[in-house]
Each structure stands twice: as structure tokens, then as C-alpha cells.
Image (cartoon, rainbow, N blue to C red; front, side, top):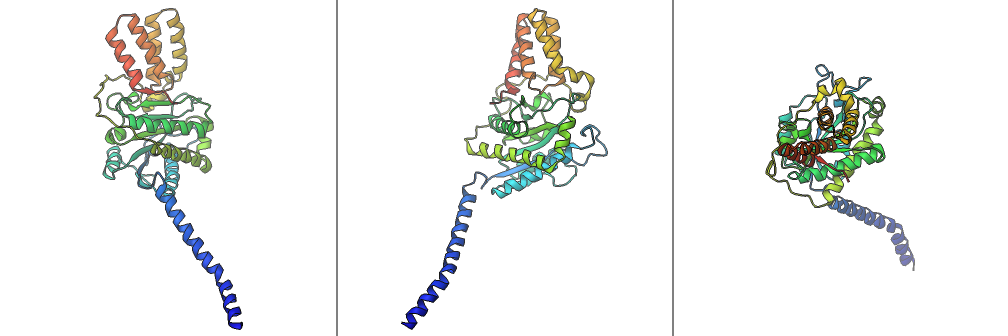
Length: 339
């Protein structure tokens, strides 16, 4: 009986150790299973923190109180990298400090690393300091670059929800709207990979600039990108067709980068409104000029597609059918409605 009692006591004394070991093993298995089941488990994400190392040479990309876009871009990219790696993704960072990396090098790194997605993180600027809404760019024509458009849909939706509580208009546009000849170098160089440039907000808006200085706000933006990528990878990814296989539109000249700080760029909303008034009066030529000026001064705004459609209508009314066809194709290929 003594031996039996002793054995029983030993058995009960060691039971917690067995349970602890089993629990640790179970926890490890569950962690591995979670990582393996993550949509990011086998994904390579290339994160491009836009610009960098230009504080001494670039006076354009700076907010009213001195916060530079390249600093904001890098903070958000680093936070997003941490979130992605925690989900099992392999993250390729274009830059990890305030240094200059050429546009060609950025695209080449994404291609060389066989990235599943290329995401270029930016923030925007314009002469109208009241402006603040997300703009996301894909390369080329929407009908050909459907994977990037699908990614852009998710990014735009999540940025709007996280930073604006779904309370603003947004724009999902081709990079040919802002660089009419060839689009942006980083998206041109990564064509074939689902790739977008995300301009989450406008740092030229004083209130927004103050928010962008805070780590918690940067984290909200990073979380929005994470959710967008997760949803994108959770669905079937559309194909990317050969560039310009559908249509190759002629360039539509527009204000670019620092040119958008000109005084006339502030009139983009007033111009389209005045154009509508003249359109109702059938003052075709004058209305056409206002719609054209609005589309040129803010070519990637959420009103630009509407401006181009009005231009197409007027050209049809004036019996300029070939030009009308081009204007309508531009409205359809270079702008995508966000669901």
C-alpha cells in the first residue's frame, strides 16, 4: 500500500508537467497551422516608400509646417512591413532610410525578387489646401491591367474606410493621367506584376499634415494597406494583358507634380461646375474649355472622368466623332469607379 500511495502521489505531481508539454506542443502546432493558412504565407511583397533623400533639393514635397512626404512614406512602409512579416509574408523594402533610390532600381528590385505585389506608398500635394482624399494609380489601360485595378480597388476602399470613415470621394486612375506620355517609371517597370501607387492623403492640407506626423495615424494607414492586400490575395487575381493591346491613346497634356501648385490648379471644381452651366446652355465651345481646364489642372481627381465624358459629348455635338471617341475611351480606360 505504501508503494501504491507513493506512486499515486508521484503520478499526480508529474501530471502538470505532461499537461504543460502537451499544451506547448498544441500551441506550436496551432501557430504553425495559422502561419501556413495565412494568405501571405508564400507571398513576396515589395514595399516602395516613395522618394527619399531629397530634402536639400526638393521644395515641393513638404507640408505647410515642414513635414516631408518622404518621411511619412517611410514610416508607413516600415509599419506595414512589420505587419506583413507577422502574417508570414516575405517583405522586400526598396529603402529603409532617408536615401535616394532611382526609379529604375526600384522597379528592377521588385522584378528581380519576383514580387507578387508591388506597392508604392506615397502622399499627395496640390495648390488647393482644402483637398484631402485618396488617389490610387495603376499603369496603362484598365481593361488590360485588371489585376492592378483589382488591387487598386481594395487599397482605395480600405484607405477611405480607415482614414476618412467612408465620407469622401476617391479616385482610382491610370498613371497616364499624371504622366501622359508613358505613365510612372515604377509602374511601367513592374508591368506584369499587380502594382499600384497609393496616395493615401494630401500633406498640403494643414490638418492632415498634423495627423500624418503621429505614429498612431501612420499605423491606421498601414493597417488599411494590410487589409487591402489580405482581401486581394483572398480572391481570384485577374490576368494582366499585353500593354496597349486594346487601345493606345494619345497623350492628354496635364499639370504635373510641382506645376500643380499653380494658382489655376485651385479652380478644378469651379471649372467643372461652370462647364456644366454652359453645357446646359449649349454653349459648346466655352463649356469645352472649362471641362478641359479642369481635367488638365487636376487630371487624377474624382471629377476628371466626368470632365472627359462631358468633353466627349461636346465633341459629338460638334460632329468631331474621332476626337469624341478618344475622349470617351480615355474616360473609360484611365478612370475606374470605386465600389
